[in-house]
Each structure stands twice: as structure tokens, then as C-alpha cells.
Length: 196
Image (tube, helix red, strand yellow):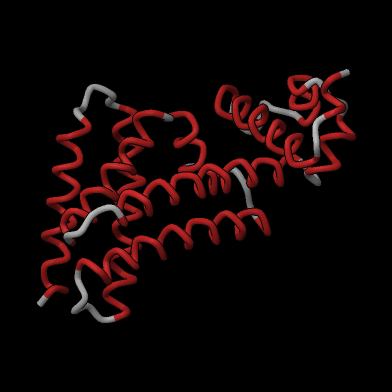
């Protein structure tokens, strides 16, 4: 009965950990709230105390993962002094995340394919937050760009990153450092017109 002694925040974290592992292993459709409760050693009502339904639990898992990755990226970028160093650091962290946590990353990258309605809107808001982080980096790397060009570049970079990450998971033998160099070269050259 030690499961009932967790504080609310600890219980929420435990449920997210358990649910995320199940979603990565089985996929969203194959996991029920009963599965989550059983794996966490609690009853379904305990899960409902924290999440209104499976979709809300899934969104919370994805948002937590994305927030963790945004923090890692922001810290890596802030530690660099040059524009190219910042760009390289952000891309390197992104690819490190894909390599070190592929199941979790694939789940987050494909999240919008699983849900609709308000939950899709919440997931898209989380994605826009990442695009905003990248737009800040683009503005720093290419300060001569217009607001439209900066937002365009940020959306393009995030879209390219998502596709490159999925491609890499299909071909895991690719070298991460080589991918970093390819991605940096593409983005750096693409931002060139904005720096003038």
C-alpha cells in the first residue's frame, strides 16, 4: 500500500512516467487507463484524480517531454557565444535527444496524428512554443531578417528537424555528428540572406 503515500505531485510524475513508457512501448490506442493504473499500482480513480481521460494523460506526457527538450536546447544555446555556435548547439541537442530517447521522441513528433479537437490544439500550442524558441535563435543568428522571414525560417527549421529525426530513426546507422554538420550547413546557408 506504499503507492497511496505519494504526495500529489509525486503521484502525477509517477503516472506520467508509467503512461509514457506504455505509450512508447504499445502506442496510444493499445493503452487504457486501466493499464496505466495497474502498472502504477493504483486504481483507476487515482488516475482520474490527475487526468480527465487518456487523451489528457497523453498530452501531458508529450508536453512534459517537449518542455524538457526545450530546456536542454535553451541551456546549450545560451552556453555558446557565436551565432554559428548557438545554431550548432541547438541542432546537436535536438539530434542527441532523438538518438538517446527515440521512442519518446517519436511519440512526441507524431503526437498530432493521434488526437483531434482541443487536445490537438494544446499539442500544437506546445509545438508553437518550440518554434518560438527557434525563432529567437534565428533572430539572434540572422538579426537582419524581417519578422515574417524569421517566423518562416523557424517553422521551416522545426519541420525539417522533425522529418530528419524520423528519417534517422528509420536508418539508425547514420552518424550523429555528420547529421549535425549537414543540418547546420543547410540552416546556416539558408539563413544567409537574412544576415545581409
